[in-house]
Length: 174
Length: 270
Image 1 (cartoon, rainbow over the protein chains, first blue to last red):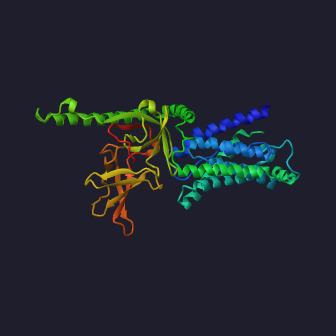
Image 2: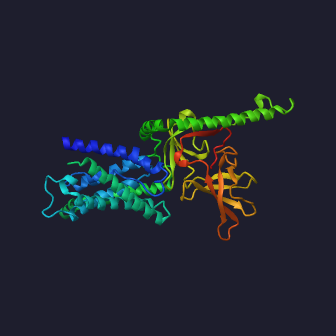
Image 3: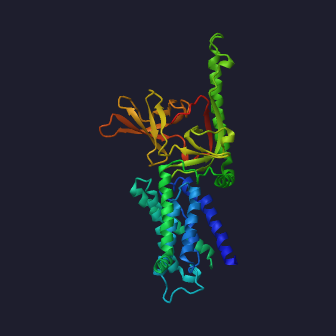
């Protein structure tokens, strides 16, 4: 295991801890957020994986991460469903916003390497897939479609702020 | 054969994606059919421990508030107790029950909520008491200002309870003023309100009426204050009122709770 892999794993664990111990509490415990929104920061783990990583691995990691999050949200399968789909969609989205000349070996999906516009498009497209499918999977149990749409939009905006906030504050290179 | 292998190789990412999505869907559907999907429940030791640690850290923040509310509750209980004893004093010696006659069907186990949700359709919370503290399946959980839920799955050290904000929760409740009773359910709209159903039309109801537990089930003792009537209406043509009850307890801030062990409870279906 080289240093890069180790760094990804440690950072991933930190994101998971932040998600289940802080953001989960914000969304389920506060008076002004509970009605419509959650904050999801954990999709950033999939977003930060190396661009050239094999898609099969990304999908498997997505599924396992989703199941792990489900364990804490008591929503068996819902996060796994959404995150697996996002991991698959990531491949398509990466291909569709590929810069002229393709991805270089040294490029990674960060502001430093790809610029803010690319990063915004990439994050927004992946995240909207994830959030929309998350609430679609919850539709199995949900009756109010209007509420689902509001939840999707608000959750998307809040999660987007959290993820872009991380990029702007910490400016990761890899 | 060669072509098949080539096909699998070329589309392996897609096939893997479809396979894993089917697994996830299977979990979702199965979970919704069967509320007892234990396998990833937060009463499991791993997430239970983690929540407990985090909760310890969070609790420092409002220790004073908790202590104040417990002191208030103590004061109220002491008031009730003294009033009760004073009332007994008015009985003549012959009528006064001797100590051994006082019934003790209830035992209360105190617990602390370490994980809670209110924004799903079926909400659960986890408490830090389990079978070794005497918790059993189906016991009622009450909170300082009302009712909180029903124990659902019991682990060794932790248990999970279905919240009153759960589609399966039906609580037998009555109007204190005239004893009409019905069942209290949650309609997934707002965690501060529940709906009291099946109150017949001849009942006279006023906004602000007190709703208490009816005691017609083994889960909760009679007379626990739940909330007050906020508004009421009849669905078209129905002979029953639907009553919106404003809960006294803020379920999103559950902290200290009490589990009710009713010793005469029979193992019947709720």
